Length: 454
Image (tube, rainbow, N blue to C red; front, side, top):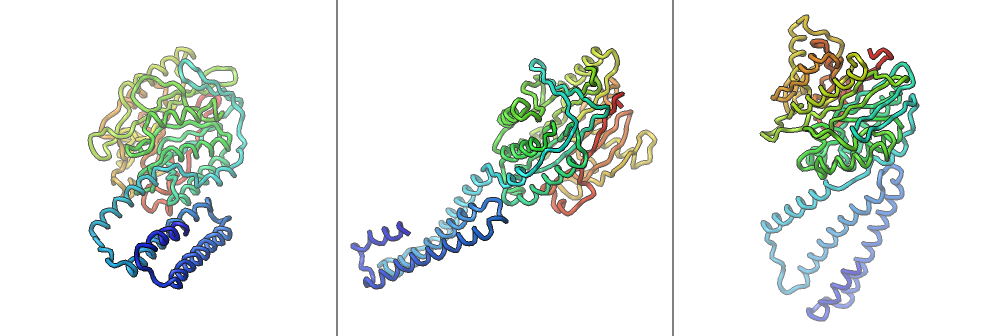
């Protein structure tokens, strides 16, 4: 308002304005309009404050609307009082407007936003068994010494937190689904196999993978349940605000020394991948019970659109070395489980054998209906590159089960060559079109490890 009064006074002495009465009428109109507009905005915000996650955002949006209205009024006034009217160059205006909108939009979807924070603040501690957790600074290995016979692991996957105003309601539903599963099962450990966030620009109206990670970490910290994770293909997208090195630093800042419940290693083996780690589950007497391997299935090969990567040879060699080390310490083969995101090719082989009625596989539950018309229509969306992980695991005889995510509608559990291959039930409300209305695929897997390692 003050700016407009000043700009009116400047040209007053240079061009012939209307009579003083008209000039005063204009100033009064601007003043009254401004007062009514902002009074209305304030009353609306006060009335709706309990229904809005961030009521002050109303003023930001209203400020933009106000600026546009005043600009239009100024242009109309200028046209009526100047000797030479404005010549409108429509193509130029369209190009400049499109560039401004694109630039502003790009900056907007990169921002840290905290729309779900009020919900996260309300999440209570969930009762669970108190286990002793130790961290080896030299190897990056966490050890959980359990105090009960049974040790319960809740497997979550494909949570897909968007972190934008557009995804706000679906983000709340996703977090609430996670809490419902945690509260129902009271696990001793939660393992998330990838795609915790969804920085996919136009699909989620966000490129930010920093705030969603910090929000989920805060959510888990409030529950008090220890948790670990593997990366998915969307967690560090090429356009996301944080690359894999930067996100690794964020996770280390949120890890066990700070949070007391995120089991993220401060050092990692010098092999392929964004996070490869071993968590040892030990009995009360200190003996090894089970090894939990978190192995990065990586994201894309870079050789084409959605050319998914795989678990590389040096990662498999590291896994084999850790299995041999545990076996040597225990004096016998120690049971282990492996968690990763993108399914191995053996998931596809086992599924096809099951559908063909083969006796080479044992079916436990679930179905693999394919990707429901999403990016692919494949039965199992695995990499085109084979990994030697499965064959190595069969040869070593330690790993009894593998768990993955990635195919949001697949949730079958099938045993093949002595290893149970299980899809995690997904949480996703955002990534796949129409999935928020689907229910059969949504949930979690509860894994119970007994005292005899079965």
